[in-house]
Image (tube, rainbow over all chains, first blue to last red; front, side):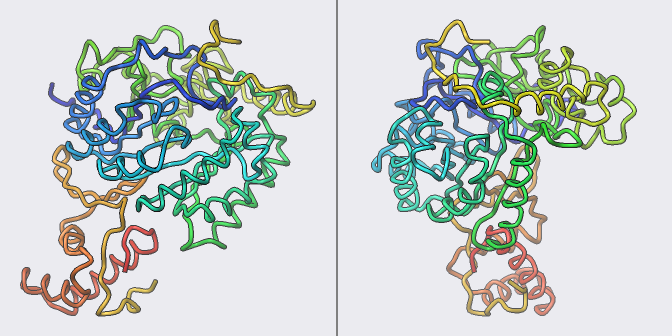
Length: 370
Length: 94
């Protein structure tokens, strides 16, 4: 189909190849109700999606999950992306990779590897992941990735259990050979929302961690690039979530549903189309879920008359839904939102007491905890 | 690195994970890196196409001056400015 003139082409696609994952991180961004293996798209369908993605103008493919290495056809999928000219980024926990498989991925044309770490302290890291030996295994994986010649990014999600070691994780990333590190404070969607009281750090701890990491940016200039995602519950203005709804990127779930972002299914009433039934371009330009909050026409006050509407796009629709009950409201993280006090209340309530135990992310956990 | 400090004998190249790509959908050249996309204007694209790790900085400038019949000193400045900026972002190795 022809591209409507007012809708930009997407630049990125997050492919959730599977929801299967050996780890149980309590902040996982996957939905609480996950797709079983039997419902996953097959190799040929993923390859068709990637051909269509290249035609649509998508540049970066983020191969994610769950754990993408849990897919036996990962190398075939990467090879296909390389054939159609897509830039491939493997987002992995490392568990399920072997030295041989890393070398195969290299030969298949994978461009970049992003490896998660849970903490710089081994014991704490394994506890957060719910998987004994994960930390040691990740050190091996980093070594194989570097040996294969890949550029490596280390990703660390920051929360209450590791907030005091944000700087140590930058140093660990350097030690592992990474050229880039993402220090990302937890965003409270999916499993992270369920575990919010266990994860949310106090404002003082969060601010200390931010200052520590910002200081390291100068110290390690030319050694490692630091991408810093600051905690949104403590912010003054909301983040430009996804660079604007249906403006830059899309997600494909393991069963083929196409979402404007990974949490979009938490907004009731949105109609998502599936790649089993329609082409990717048709979905991008015409599906009701993508149209729902595209542009600025859907906005109500305070966004409607806000001079920042084209820079932060009203923040996050899913967060507005979760904390105010209406997806069209301004993201309550914004200090201009009439619901901003709810964010303040969560920060003081959830960080006041000792952290409860994690509810680990598990595929078989149905019905999902609430 | 400052533009003037790049050696004439340096062999500029794109590191693994950084690629120059013509985007047919948008009809423009892009320099791709992990989580980054830079638009390359036509001059930058001509420079980056020659950053193969086989040609020296001096040879790249000679080639561009000959190909486009342009002033060598001016091209030398353009090439150094572009490469120094990209080297700071770790998108070019010198």
